[in-house]
Length: 106
Length: 106
DNA sequence: CGACTATTTGGCTATAATGCCAAATAGTAG
DNA sequence: CTACTATTTGGCATTATAGCCAAATAGTCG
Image (cartoon, rainbow over all chains, first blue to last red; front, side):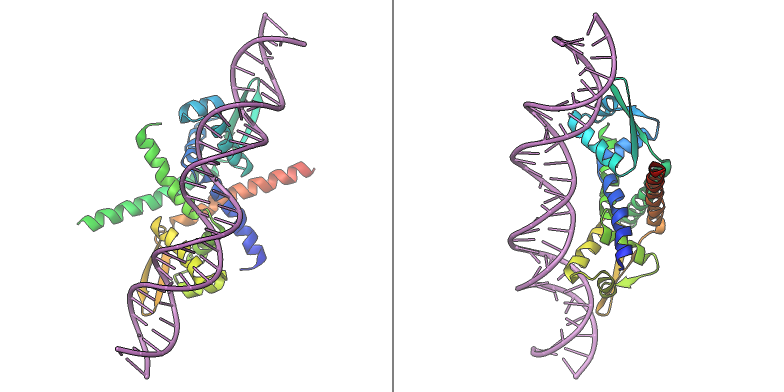
């Protein structure tokens, strides 16, 4: 693996890591329906404000989300909807896994 | 979030986590060109056999790879190529990030 | 300014992931 | 059976991640 390749795969892994948490996937899913402020997200998630805020900053640092402050609230939204294709990928694997389970039961 | 939703996002996160490592992404990339035995992967990666083997087992447990043993060697391959769309997703974000950088420099 | 609300940050502990080495396993060949 | 090769597993030290609490920050309103 060349150093250049290495850098590429590390950059990719950074983004994958940002997505690799149930709460963060949930956040992405919610934001796919439109922007939300932190308190709305927090309520839906049901964790501490600080926890939610840290998840959001992970996603933001990876370039997946962007935010802006309007009055007292900070609104977050997806920076590019291409992330949603990620779910398609994931679902494909899950479906495969389920099919295998079924096949084994026969 | 209903318990059912929670389970769904946890299942998705399992798969995302399996992909969230540079070496494992590299493995997926190599296997997208066809199956490889562990020693070929090990050589390309340049890490300890045990390290490579553990990465492979993570990907296999997530349902991303499958393997079979032929003679002394174990061959691994992608279980469904849908994982490759993952790279498309990732690249989309990386490209966005790069564009933003460029925009800032103007 | 001072009280209040929304959010972020720092600190801390608990848990999980990484990667090496050494040992175990499985298949092959003599 | 023995020696050998390919791979996996167990153990362990190191580092990273998660989530809570408390404190800091930023914006709003009187």
